[in-house]
Image (cartoon, rainbow, N blue to C red):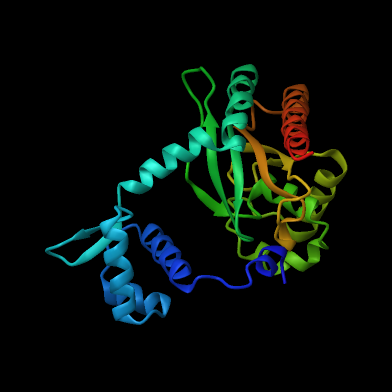
Length: 267
């Protein structure tokens, strides 16, 4: 049982169902009716409709009165904007992402772990050049994705063999074998940063460094002491040799500084 589950002894079922509905509508990428949502989530149709009506009243979902279908509502955009402006990690990460992108001519991003199996992009910066890789804030990926997965696995303290099944479910453009992946995890544990040179996306090198969490913050077992990371992406032809080393060490230094700032804030 993970720490988060232990702390949540009496979950409010209606709230959990509302969150499940919002996640379903977000992942569906299209409007959905009450019956579809209730079947997909195992919620009684009448209960599902009452929750959707309430979410619609508060702008979290929007109902098409003619088609009688629901989709995510505009209030969520305001919440997202408020989160970017008020969340310490997002705000502090943005301060370091911009100069990292400019100095190394790469795209940079801040990653936050969502639950135990997904990650979400919460901040980004592009290099001030004519060509750069594009990353969307709000994009979600499997937690073991690329160099980010190396960092999270290394920080978890878990035996990488324990993650063989989720590893096999990942979609890589250039699939590494499991033993090579474990070597990359070991490298991340030893060096404090990780590198994926074109495995996850062909021709693209991804560098990641973990931002460790304050000791008091509840963490999932699989996440260990790390639910956030800084990431840089660039063309593999560009990121090699001294350029790659310089970027990796700079990213590691900035991530460590963010980790220290959170530790200091809870003393």
